[in-house]
Length: 267
Image (cartoon, rainbow, N blue to C red; front, side, top):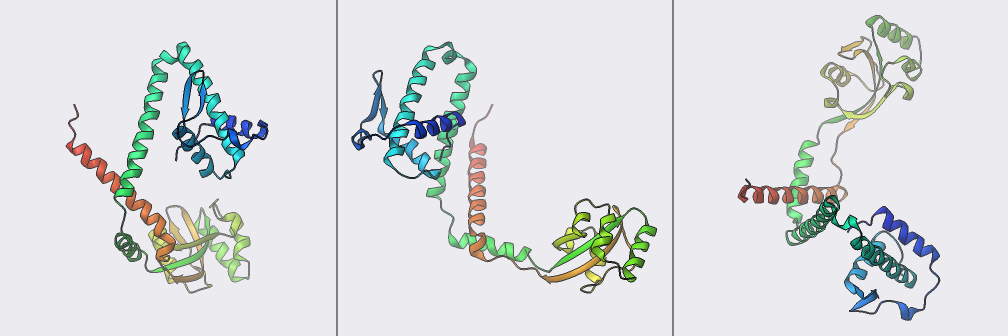
């Protein structure tokens, strides 16, 4: 659904606030025009489209909204008539912007119609889900780490841990800004999310243990603690179905555009 410009939204909001209650007989009748402004009719179809846009944004259906939309369309028509009489109507940039806006509306409508006529089947979505499940396997690890510049610093941290120091307190000296203020917490991740030396050390740890030998990576020296681990599982089909459908539609549209491009004669 097309979203009104900020100016139009502001005008509508002002209308909603300032309009007095209007009798029901002023609401637009079905068919024909909802109003005539200086001899120019505002079609019912334009009213219906604009009214539907407002409702799609959460504005409740009411006679007050109908009156406000009618008034907004009258104001727009007045401004449009003045704009057409001004030199701005002949500005090439304005004409180009109007053409781009027209193209965008038509293309969006065509794509929406294409998606309706080419629905993604449940079988397709479940096949995509099976691929996703196949990619989600193995183990996730909840880890903490303390990153320092030199090996000697890391060894001192290990010694302090052995003496009973708290890992989250020692993590305050870490040079990793993303975790130092959170006790070195890295959250849940698969081992593959980390660089190989880190991942290798992490997967060898027992729950609750830390690396007594500092681990060197390109970032510096790490002391790593494994808090917990769990089997990595794919979310339920229904939970990811909307995203799968959206991605499948995007892929379908992209394929359609590529086929059109391949057939087109472009000089």
